Image (cartoon, rainbow, N blue to C red; front, side, top):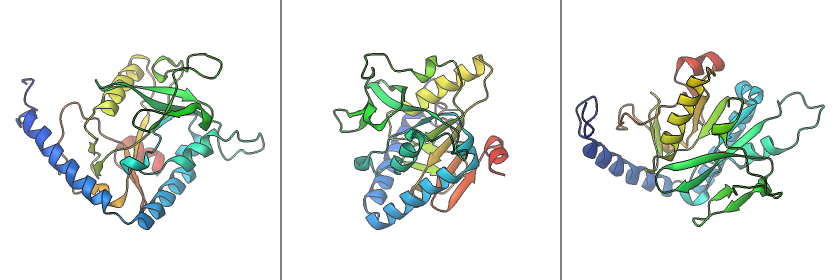
Length: 241
């Protein structure tokens, strides 16, 4: 297979053009979404995540910090719930270790660093909250790629999704690059693959096969919208049944 075409024979530059067109279409849809509806869907989606048995039982996870300017599904309630130091009496939720993204450069390089408080986040040049590389004591934050134990779950953003697990990102390739590296690491260490769960507004869910894919695109295991959880892969079916 040449570097310029995919398995289906479509030239990569054609796929990139198709993705670009689709991105602007979905961005317009998101922009025209009623703020009251968006807020309602934000609450519903976060409640579904917080109530899910697989979320309650997960011990280590990577999650994105939602950015209002990008119109991403809100994760603030989920994050504050994770970071709340649950008292010893609360057995409904396992204490969790959380890793959140820090973009390092324009070449799709992003790290997932451990934080233990919301105060660990600072706004970057694009006004997106990120963890500083070191904590208040000057210690380097743990990078998920160097952790001794596997993460169970990734909560992922995206611009569009379909019910077969295709995900359209924003074009930077940050998540696909990181997920590919992490899946290779998990394989090398004989760890169970983490569950990849995307959060989506109703307007972001497209017809199957509309989203063009390249060999570097990482599919998701499950999709959560305000209507509920849609398990896609056998791994997701297993935990959602």
